[in-house]
Length: 170
Image (cartoon, rainbow, N blue to C red; front, side, top):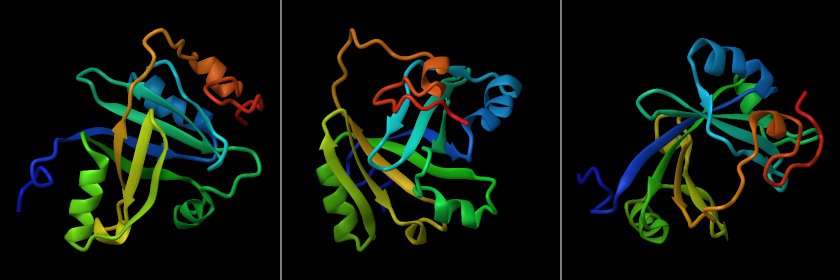
């Protein structure tokens, strides 16, 4: 079996960790392990979560996630983790999302959450039952405006990141 999805470029990008509060994740992922905020982050109001990324020596990244106030986005995930959170998904970038979807579907893999609505970030998820209990996100990043200002960690936590709702993180 070809490890590159039949010739498509597949690159591991980050691990996402979710908790009820991003602030509870920072003492470990930033302070203890030395993660530096990449700049950027913000809210996905439609889905109901806030996110930001930290980077580490050697290029590894961890995405920190929390639910927005009133959101049920992580409810089933927090049920599984007894309310504490943990690793939510692994992210892999692909150079052609349509081709990846076609090849995975042809092989019988169950996919969900196909989202092509944002040209900056198109994604689909490989069902956890297909990946030994791990949610796999395949994403095709799109063009970014080079002069786009990336919010600071403090701005993201204050609800003033990309698409921020203005409500500070708990």
